[in-house]
Each structure stands twice: as structure tokens, then as C-alpha cells.
Image 1 (cartoon, one colour):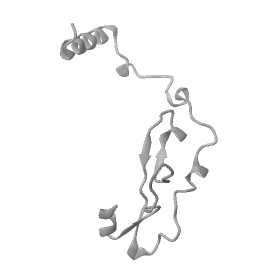
Image 2 (image 1 turned 90 degrees about the vertical axis):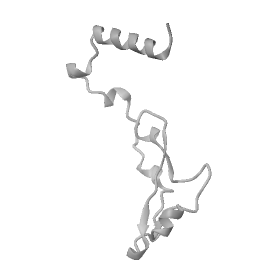
Image 3 (image 1 turned 30 degrees about the vertical axis):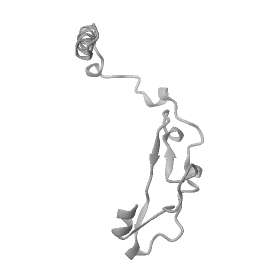
Image 4 (image 1 turned 180 degrees about the horizontal axis):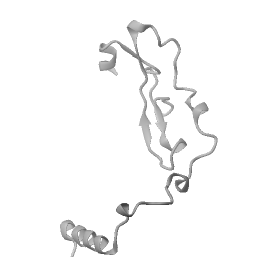
Amino acid sequence: MQTLDELGYDVADAEDNGPDDPKIIDGKHFLPQHRERIVLVGFRRDLNLKADFTLRDISECFPAQRVTLAQLLDPMVEAKYILTPVLWKYLYRYAKKTSGAR
């Protein structure tokens, strides 16, 4: 944050910290995974654009329904993405050999 300030940027909600920090957005609202991300929105001071921009109301942009994993997967997968039994066996043995397990 200090570097962005030194470069002449105002960061939205920069003063917020802690568990209710609006800059921390959980991916679970958009994808079937729980992964928090830090989202920084900065505005160059010389452009006078920031005004009262905030991420505090970002939840209004969350989808009404969560996407399921089945909805994301393509039902028709190209053969080049499917492991053959021979390749699977090779990869399994290689993993065992390199991990030290016997």
C-alpha cells in the first residue's frame, strides 16, 4: 500500500483492515472453491477519479445462484486430456519412485 501511495495512487478502502476488510473477497461467491483474494482498486491522484469508490457493497454483485462444478465442466473432453491406463500406470509408478515410497 505504501508503494502505491508513493506512486501517486489512492486505493479504495485502504484504511480498512481486519476481518471485515472489503478488499478481501472470497472466490466461493463466484466459483465452487473457497479461496480468498485481495482486490486492490487504485486511482491515480492526478486524474481525480476516486471520489467515494468502495468495495464495501461488492456483495450486491455476487451471483444470485452459485455455479456448480458440473456446470463448469465440459461434457465432451478431447482425448488428449484423458489419461490412458498405460499412462496412468506409468505416472503412478513414477510418483511412487520419486517420492521415496516403495
